[in-house]
Length: 281
Image 1 (cartoon, rainbow, N blue to C red):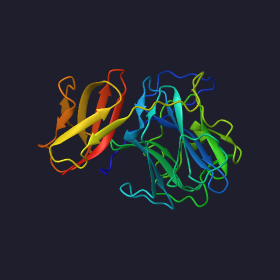
Image 2 (cartoon, rainbow, N blue to C red):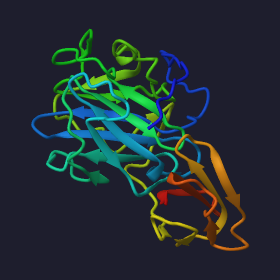
Image 3 (cartoon, rainbow, N blue to C red):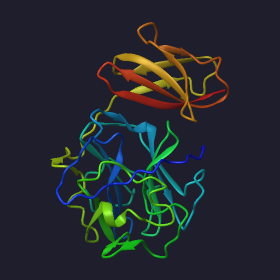
Image 4 (cartoon, one colour):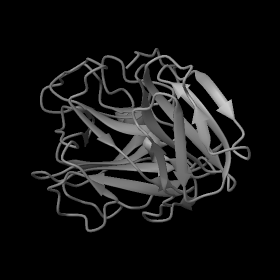
């Protein structure tokens, strides 16, 4: 992973619930640090279009781990998230919420661990809960707000995630961007309010996409349940290295690419973009 210097974005706090513009990307809308393995993270899509979650990961940094190239835990996805919808991930042993979209044992964190939403194609952390590289003891806190034995909900006026620089040296955005519920309270999980609009609970789309062979030496074959409009290939620095109109063919010649890891993004005629990682050998 290439380390990225993130731009500074400051979330504004309003007394009236008003949002001036739609989010430009996904962010974490709820955090549950409950009893035992009852850990949940909710991701919200308010971008105006369906988003391919395979381009995103949740990274966990435990015990002050600050190595961006080696997070302590990693959760990957293979699903589409519809506009104005949320996606709930829970630990594989969590049992207080009945309908998570995904359960994964890698989502294992305590109140003193940083939990982050990472975007693969941009090599960028879109949202950071806590502070990467800091061990605060048992928790971060601001007034009555705490990251241990609590549920945190993103305020309705917040329309973007907190970047690494927003929470550098401490969890600075805890007080300005979050509200709090009691331990093991999942009554708000599965929905999120942005401005005055509440998301559809747990809605998501599934559009199949397969590429083969993987690893590949020359020609990459694409199979999908949707009608393809265009294809782009990015290296893991986020640079576009190949593009083609799929009306001609549904194979991609990658023979000229150097060996390494790549992301292929397939745009469908309904406007959604589906992506997968592949290896060029």
